[in-house]
Length: 333
Image (tube, rainbow, N blue to C red; front, side):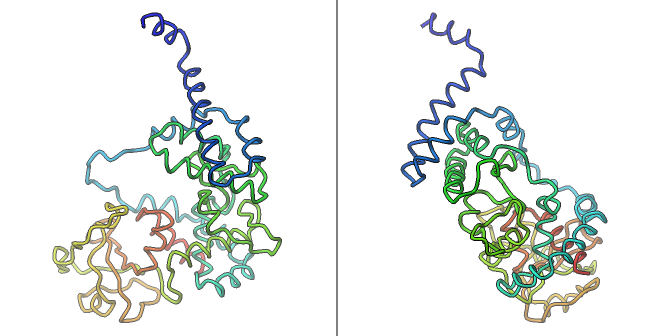
């Protein structure tokens, strides 16, 4: 036993990790074949895989939940994500892609400006889509084991993308597995990516037409309601009974995001409570909305419709969803 321990200690930890990773790949290989990945793809990919220590470091550095209920203000986030440069590039992209955007909006009901705003938020309109080898990162995260089922599944989905004819060198993205202009996970690509230019391939990496068609399809699939805004900026009277409007619903997904939303009321009911729009179009009286005050009482608040929840389906963060909606409004305006 002592001899075994001594030999183990003599081998660098990185080498031990790499050896363990290569052993785990045998399990992952069998899983991929069992789930229908072609042997040709498996034989081409697995010999190239090595452990990505950088990916694992980045994953372990993600903030946990320390139990604090403190929430930072929205204003600084808004200033850096709905800034003049991003709005300007968004308007340029909007005008350049109008024909494609109009077609996707006709087919899906998703507003042109929302599609552009997602593209702008995810990759700054394609300026940066990530440079991690997607399959290497996903295999490394699966090996790490903290979320093995998720990342093993995404790795296998990535192999299936190769089986669809997408070249390996195109599968670059974030360390966590998001790829292309809309930053889809591989499983999302397989389910929702669309060919927008008619060449027979859903190329979300280099084709604006495919990028926009895929984003539109994602939102339509998530339940976007045509003709309804995502929300509207409002002013709230100091007299509003916030305690009486506290939501008692508990969301199984992203509870800390949804617990900041009030109970749902119709727009007519909000108006009767003294809530007034700061500008823009006020939705119809029967539209249901929930209130959020991201910077606290006295600052700009927002009434959010069901379409806001569709944006949250893309990224479950109030700051993200609010910024997407505000960028969309600015791009269109």
